[in-house]
Length: 540
Image 1 (cartoon, rainbow, N blue to C red):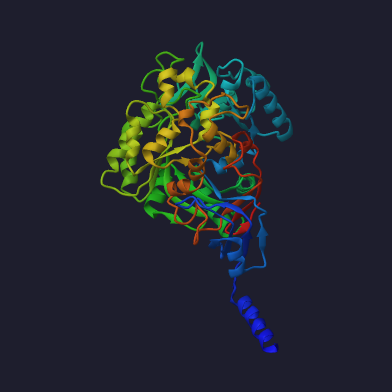
Image 2: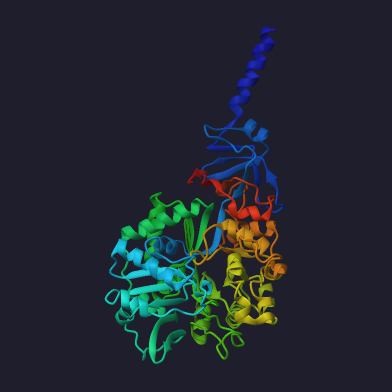
């Protein structure tokens, strides 16, 4: 009898000693792995910042031990979400400026500016977020009121999409803008031979060039503020669509010092100094920073009628929008990037801009493999231009909430026939095989669950329209989740290291308060992130 007890004791001790020690164990979960077969699992073990093994709760507990065990209590777990197109640094800077998002009239815009200036007493008032399409009178504003309120203080208020700006006379003066100023690749609006203060696309750069430069401390605050917002909403990787060298190097230094946890796919802005530095240096890759792409603008935005269309705007006769880059300049740039190992990511909204970009991509990428060049937005496609996305080198990078934000007036701009090829996400997916999903925040809200809801339901949060906006182009829940995880990672050349819960990949995951794959779709926008983990470390 004693011998039997000793043998049993030795077996227990042996089993205990045979367990592998890991950093974290998660059990009793409903984890969507987003692997090739779209499996679910109950548990996983994390070691050295990566998923070590996935299995049943019993198997993981029998095989591994850890001082940190999370009982998920059947909560939903997803891979860390990826925003494939956003402005992370810009979101942070916006926290230091006048927030004009959600204003329903120009009068409300003015009130917010007045309150901001009363509190901040800024030498240069900068704001962003107004949208004249949300006002009763859907017309561009005029600078007259700003001139009367702030005659000596420059004011520059950017439209929500970043493609139009309202300036007072003081701002125009410091930027050197007059009636004689040329406006290639955009417009300087004039009424009765007077500047209205509204600039569209390229002329905005003249004002932005004289903005006060944020201090390093302000930049760090901006990046940390943006990280706090993003991790609280389940984002673990963001693709920042346009950064300069100084900001990229600051991000790298903060990440290396473990001050910034967020993983960032940094697209360099299309500026000579950035191109000369990065294309010569080659790709830069750390566990948290990836620099191997160039963000380029082909045209403006539909809301400000800057998107380049093949035929004139339905609500503005003989107006076609415009390319914001010269045709030959763009072709030369595309060839230069094709000759490097960098990816090209081009903002294209109008059908004319999309055709030009797609034709250029198709030509310069002949005989090349695995380039994954992206068309950012791919918003209005007509004729047979969808066919270009059959090219394995070309990926549509799209933002579902653009559809539900623009649907109220998109047909006015495009007409009943042309709008059928707008925001055509299912069509793009069927042709290309993958779509990378993002928000374009702060143009849209950061919340990725609004992205999920918009992609599937094609409705606003009030349930309009009843049957969904062009619902034939809605995505399934599985397609949407892939677009926010593994396909977004693929578009960043990162699908081997993130985007799914699989052995060997970074342990980036989130725990939710509901199962967005099964709840009523109208409940998805209310989803709360209970915890966010990057590298197996809890960051929210």
